[in-house]
Amino acid sequence: MLSFDGVTKRHGPRTVLTDVTFRALPGRVTAFLGPNGAGKSSALRILLGLDRASSGAALVNGLRYRDLRTPLRTVGALLDGSGAHGSRTARAHLAWVARSNGIPGRRVAEVLERVGLAAAGRTRVRRFSLGMGQRLGLAAALLGEPEVLVLDEPANGLDPAGVRWLRELLRGHADGGGTVLLSSHQIGEVAEVADDLAVIAGGRVVAHGPLGRLTAGHGSLEGAYFAWTGAADRGGAADLGGAQRPGGTGPLGGAGRSGSAR
Ligand SMILES: Nc1ncnc2c1ncn2[C@@H]1O[C@H](COP(=O)(O)OP(=O)(O)OP(=O)(O)O)[C@@H](O)[C@H]1O
Image (cartoon, rainbow, N blue to C red):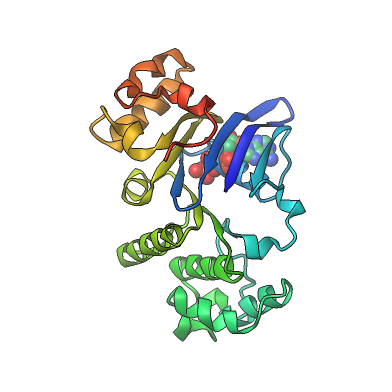
């Protein structure tokens, strides 16, 4: 399980996250949805120990990332592409990640196969397309067979077949009991795969909970999204009250609850 509890982040005088609170539960795909600059990456960086919260806590199975004993076996992450050096082959990059994390070398071939890169294992990463780079990043995330996946815009650069493949991979992971948190600004992608939503705008969570319940009364996720984020842009929590009343939880009321109802 992943939990954000009152996470606030300031950069100098600028507050980029304010009291971010939501959970991502095992067996569920949780989408972290919001416009460009809303604060998704900032929140994920804090969760993954790459930055510190000014206050509040973001925890993986109740622990801060830096306190996890075997991080790659607990949480697989994809941020900003594969992170592999262009001169390395995909296989060499994954072998290096596996070795430095005590993961058996056999996993390299397994994850290359899993992400559809088996034939490209000996290709230098600089020759990869954007989509292949994303697949390599996913391979690294899967290396340690983690229960939790945290993926920042994983569909970037994937073609339609790749997007469908990714959706099935995430669904399968959650159906096997895993926790998936994926950030996105693509409403269509999210509508297809998410069980739960946390919507962020202007650094604040403006809605969270089960997708069906949150969108009830809006006709579509898109309608709901613009109601929530438009209202947030006007700075009006009060504007949000009617946005999802049919589902029984006002977005900000929902945000104040600990975690999403199942
Ligand atoms: N080191 C920093 N110093 C100052 N401001 C920052 C810093 N890092 C991020 N920000 C600001 O925080 C806000 C949130 O950025 P963030 O990258 O988290 O958004 P995002 O939701 O991931 O956006 P996108 O969908 O475009 O990737 C932005 O306004 C950004 O300019």
